[in-house]
Length: 326
Image (cartoon, rainbow, N blue to C red):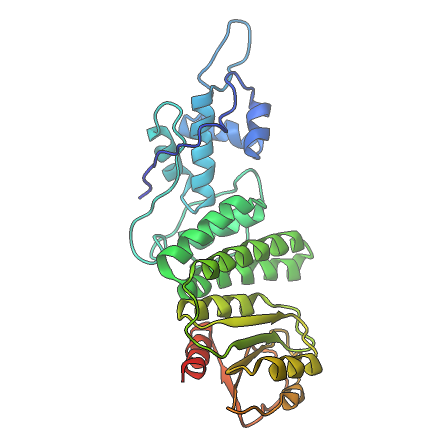
């Protein structure tokens, strides 16, 4: 069920008497979509002057904005239209969904395109994931950020990563691999996710662990977003970390270990064979000893005996937290 909630931000409401083309530009959707919403759901222009076409009023545009936001957040067009029509006057709606971890997890979200945009395949995904994919494909970073921020606040890092972010990121990446299109979507979504994760870290209390944790990608690995997810998960446990980022050379990681004396080092390898286990042998021995932890499917051979492999974000958070707080 979708419940409209009043929004105080009326300053963005456009002036009255707007044409279909003007409203389409304002909302970032296709004129054909506006006509469909008018025909199917009654979300059409209410103003009319003699001898001219019907025009959209500020209240009309507010309802359309509600419709657009709710469909991007995962509501079906019919459900979003009912909520938009329930918003009286010039109130701008937002979405508040009840239920468990994902209001759409046990049902199917109706759909169709928003603004004529393309979609990605998300079989079995819940409403939030479908809404995030729609926002990502529309390059609507504001809507995408709102969805990610709300999920992080309600459920925490690990459920958000597993249930929301990974399905959408994988689907967007698969579409790019299959069609060669959508790298802009992948980059924009990654920036959104990184910004939301950093915001969570900024709100956490100061770390209780004295020795830091180092998070790095393997020397040939460029995908650093999982490091930010791990850093955020650790921050929820009040474990501080330092992210070294993508493609960290072995000698640079060794130097960072000597400089900081970490309690744990986590090295990520995502792309097949981007992780060379021999690179781990250059990590120096410390006193007290550090815990070497690795993650990702890209490791190309047997790991050193002292390395602990983790298979999920939840496991990595647990293992690194134990090392940092021992």
